[in-house]
Image (cartoon, rainbow, N blue to C red; front, side, top):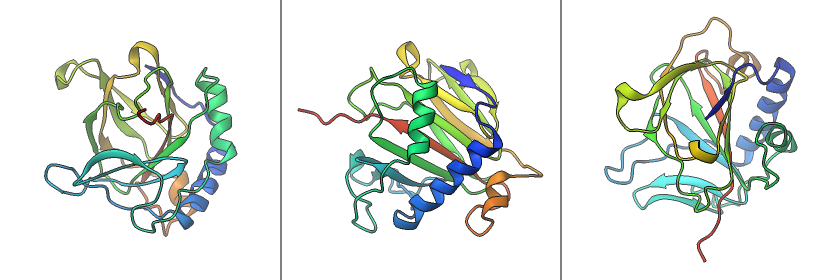
Amino acid sequence: MQIICDALNITNQKSLIFDVLKIIKSAPFFFPRLPRWNKPFKILITNAGDWGWISDKSGFRYVKKHPKTRKDWPEIPCSFFEIWKKFSCSKIMPNSCLINLYKNIDSSLGLHQDKDENDFSVPVLTISIGSSCKFNYGKTKEIKLLKTVDLKTGSVVILSGDSRLDYHSVSEILKTKTNILHNKNPNIFPRNSRISITLRRFKEKS
């Protein structure tokens, strides 16, 4: 796994926030649900691209339309593709962009693998903006064997090659005095909020 802290400067981050705000106008955030218990996640999500990842009582999967609006997902912004080209080392472009919103310090995301894409030869790239978080990762589900790093705003994480199926989680959102997300739009992004922008390539099963 490659973790690049401070990969994106403030100007880059402001541009990404602007594009996220455009996405959520047509594809608003919603709560995914755990398939087995039908309980909501502790984050909100939305998507852009040809395919969007969702989770509900029917399971984890990629779909072409927003589950609430029933409309196609908006296009992936050019600014996201530019970051992919710069950091992913992949000539294959993503066709799915998952945006997670961690609204406050009570938000978290459990340990998991990104394995619904049906093709693990293409990297997964995630951008962090807003409050820092405790990011845990490793080759195992055993918590004590995982590594932990504070992901700051502007960080980029790449899962590729041997690390493509690494386990990872966000266990804690850290309080912050200044937050570029909140400063940009406090009505949508609370003071301690964080977003992650994850670019992936989904392949339909033949």
